[in-house]
Every structure is written in C-alpha cells, then in structure tokens.
Length: 354
Image 1 (cartoon, helix red, strand yellow):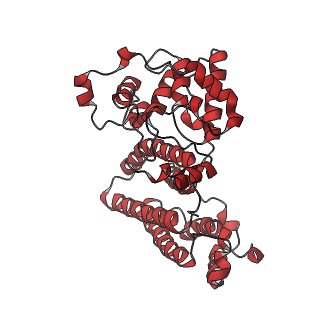
Image 2 (cartoon, one colour):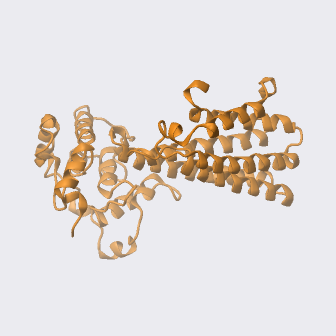
Image 3 (cartoon, one colour):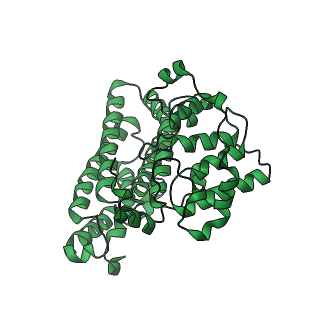
C-alpha cells in the first residue's frame, strides 16, 4: 500500500524530524543505515534481536476472539478499572504490530511488561529486543535501548519503567501527554462523583452540572484558540493545559466542599476587573500583522471567542456558589477567577505591555 512517508520526500521529512523512516516488515534499529553516531545502541540491538516473548504466552484462538478490539494501553494502566497485566499481555500479543495513532503501540506495552515483570517473568533481554523493533525518533530509540541495557546490567528490580521515560520528539510527547490525560481522567472520575454526591440536592446539583458544562466549553475553546498549535508538540501542549485546568477546577470544588475558599487573600489585590479590561483591550488593539509576528495559530478573534466562554464560566461559578457556599463573598469569587484569567491572557500582550 502506498504511504507518503515511504517516498523519497517523506523519508527526507522524517530524517529532518529525527525519526527513522522504517518500512513494514521486520524493521530493526540494529539494521538502520542512518544515524551512524548511534553505534552503541545498534550493537546492543544486534546482541538481543533474537529474544522474543515466549511462544507459550501467545493467546489461543478462543482468547483471540475474546480480545477483538481490546485496548492494551487501558488494560496495562487500569484506565477502565483495575490494571490487568495478564490481559494487557494477551491483548498485545494478539496483534503485536498494532500501533494506534496517539496511543502506545502493542510492542511498547509488551516491552514495559517484560521490563517491569508485570504479569510475566521479568526479562530485560526481551524488553531490549522489543525496544529495538519500535520505530520512532533516533535519539529516543538510542536512549531507550541504552536505558534498558543499563537496567539489565544493574539487575534492576523496579516496576516503573515506561516507554515515555526516553522520549525526545514532539510526536512522542503528544502520545505520552494523551496517556497522562487518560490516567488523569480515570482518577478524576471518582473525584467528580464525590462532588456530585456532596451537593446532591436538586437545585445545587443542577447548578454544579451547569458550571461543569461551561467549564468544558471553556477548556475546548482555550485548547482550540489560545494554545499554539504549530510544531509536533502541539497535542502535548493542548493536553497539558487541559489537565492543568481540570486539576484547578476539581481542587477548587474540593476546597469549597471542605468549607474553605480557594481564593483566600485575593481581596487585597488591585482591582482585577480593571486589569482584565486593560489586558484584553491591549491584545485586541494590536494589528493582525503585529500579533501574528509572535503567534502562528493563535488569533485575536479566537481569544475573543474564548473570553466569551470564560465570562459564562465565571457567571456559572457565581450562580453555583450563591447556592452552595453563600459564605464566600461574590466579589471574592469574581476577583479570584479574574486574576487567573489575566494570567492566561498576559502572554498575548505586546512585549511593551508585559
């Protein structure tokens, strides 16, 4: 099948990105003609290339049928419940070459299982062999192979080796950020359910859910309009910002549930609303050309759309807390939320205004 990255131009693009232009069918770092500076890791791969997961580990036909459409990444990390390394191994072995866009490949899952001794006897030689057959950025492969070889020589007995330990490329950062986002989502699910149970009366619960909807709208708007989306690390940048916003949102609610305010002390700050207006107007007053000199994908109109989403989010907080925590003054809520918004907008100011 034709693939654009197997053409001469595609190979050149991958080389410029520092990614090995592997082709299907038994590629191995040991045989890679490019990147001659990485001879040490290639020699390690030659030493371990014939080590593979034991044949007895491969699932039988009945198990293969049950594992159709399984998610090895979720099974390994316990994203949908308890981690199940045995099921993760069977799922990965059912299709060892599976490599879903944005997720850890099945080979990467098998590598981690054997390196960490999770649900299988620890075998760092097998982990090295698997690492040598996983395509990616040259520096990543070199670092990962040497990392595993060092662990093998040290007779390492830990359980926390990860494919993400040795990443260097923007694309890999995106994969690992997505994984961290999935892990955070699994953790946050129980936190959110606890908060819904805390404010279970119909009126307050409805206001909390409405606040959450407005929060999700704001998160989406900020990810689309206020995070730079140029470069291979764009997915990582969006997901990292999203995770930070979610953590603050849940922590604020948990603080209020405990009877405290997440905005203690903000009353002493200078008028936040005036600061926000000055900041926002200075951003919008810039010419499109001047603004574009510093930002490739962020646009002033996108900031305007995000600001509208933030105003609805702010009002959602005021309405919710008037019912759930009337002890917190309205001005304190507005001041605290507004100061955070100013901090988000300040990077878009002209240099002379910062």
